[in-house]
Image (tube, rainbow, N blue to C red; front, side, top):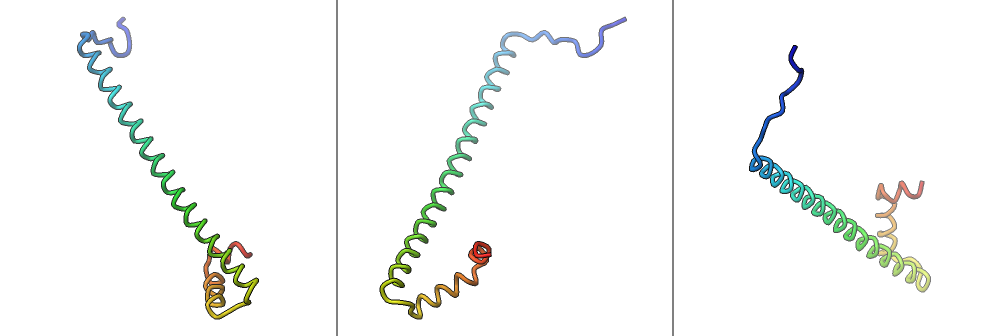
Length: 93
């Protein structure tokens, strides 16, 4: 009776070395792609943070104006826009 399964292939050292090099190249490529993906994520988050900071500053300015002068038409229109914004409406509920 013979053995089951694949018989081991006797490969020369050049073939093994080339396979090892190819594996290392693939590993470096995957690592590069991971870092690019993470860098993209960080960039997107930083942009979102900047937008939120601008929005917060805008709200601070409006609140300061309200404290000093009351509501004018421009602020009234801004509040109506926020009221109709689905993201803001979800926060209020």
